[in-house]
Image 1 (cartoon, rainbow, N blue to C red):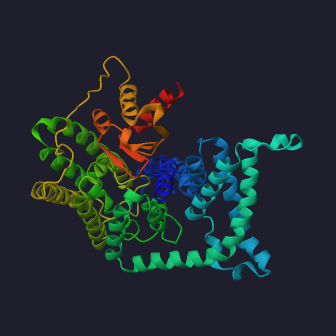
Image 2: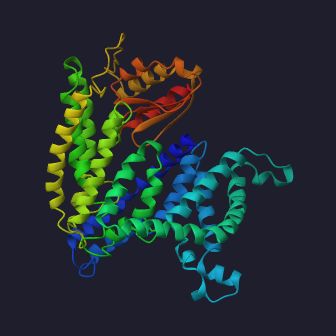
Image 3: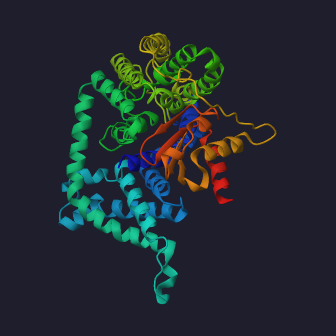
Length: 480
C-alpha cells in the first residue's frame, strides 16, 4: 500500500509540473497590470487568462496525469481514458443531472455536487482509468469485435466503470465533501496555528507521498479553500489568501540551503568536496525552483531526528508568516522564480518580509542542524563509516548521464535483478528481485545524494532534478 501511494505521489508531479507555465503567464500579467488584473491592459488580460486556463482546469490535469503515471506502460490511451473518466463522473454528478435524477429543482440539490469538478475527483478518475488500462489493454475480443480489442477497449471499460463509481459517489460524495470542508474549516479557523499544523504535517507526510492528499485540501478547490487558485487569480482576502503557501518560501529558499551548508561543514574532511558539490546543486534547486527533495532525502532516513526538526521548523515558519499576514504564492513550489512572479500580485501582502524571515530561518537551520549533527553524531552525507570499496564513474568523453545510469544499473544487479524502473521529480523508483544483490557502494560512487530502501524489493535512488535523463538512459540499457 505504501508503494502504491508513493507511485500515486510521483504521478501527481506530472500535472503539477505544468503549473509553472500558469505562474509565469499570470505573473507577467500582474507585473504589467498589478491593480486592474488585466482590466487596464489588453495584453496583460490576454496572458493572465491564458495562465488561468491552466489553473482553472487542475482537476482535468490530475485525471490525465494520474492515469498516465499509474498506467503500466505510460501509454497515451491511459491518459485519454483518464479524461473520459473525469467527463463521465462530472457530468453524471453535476447539479443539473442530480436534480433530474432526484426530481427536484437545481437550487435544492446538495451543494456538494456543485463542487464535483475538483482535484479529488480528478485523482479518482485517473486511478480508475489506470486500473482499466492495466487490466484491459491487452485483452483480445472475438473477431467480430476485434476492432475494440486492446487499448481501444480501455476507454470503453473506463466509461462503464465510472458509471459504478458515479453511483457510489452519488451517496458518498456529500459525506466526503462535508468531512473535507469540516477538516479544512477546523484548520482554517485556527488561523496561524492551523497554518503551522498544516506545514508540520505537510513535511512529515513527504516520505509516504500522502502530503499530496493533504495539499489538495488547502491548495485546491476540494474543500472551498483553494489557496493557490485564489491567490493566482487575485481573489480572496489580502493578507490571508496565500497563508498556506507563504511560510514555505523562507524554508525552501533559505532554511534548507542553510541545512545543506551545515551538512557540508560537518562532513569528514576527505568527503567534504564530494558532499559540497552535491549540496551546492541541491541548494540551488531548492532556492530557485523550490524542489527540496535532493536535500531532504539526503538526511530524511539517515537522520530522522533532523527531519522531525525540519518539519517543526516548517510549521513554525507557516505560523509566523500567517500571524503577521505576510503572503506570497506559487503555482509550482516556493522557490525564487515563483516568489519573484508573485511580488506584484495585487493580493500579495508584505512579501519582502518573507525574505527577512528567510534569513532568520537560515541562521536557525544552520546552527541547529550543525549542533544536532555533531552532538548526536548523526550519519548525514559525508559522515558515514568509511566504505571498503569505492568505485569511480568515468564519464570522460561520453554522456555523463549514460555513464551514471550504467553504473547505477550495474549496482542494482542489471537485467537479472531489476524488475521495474520509474522516476518522480528527483528520484529513481526501482523494484528488484533480490535486495542482497544490490551494490550500494557502486551506486553511491556516482555521487547520488542518497539511497532509500523502502521495502524488500523496492529501492529509491535520489538523483536530483536531472533524474529524467538518468531514467531515460537506464531505459535504453534495458532495451538493448
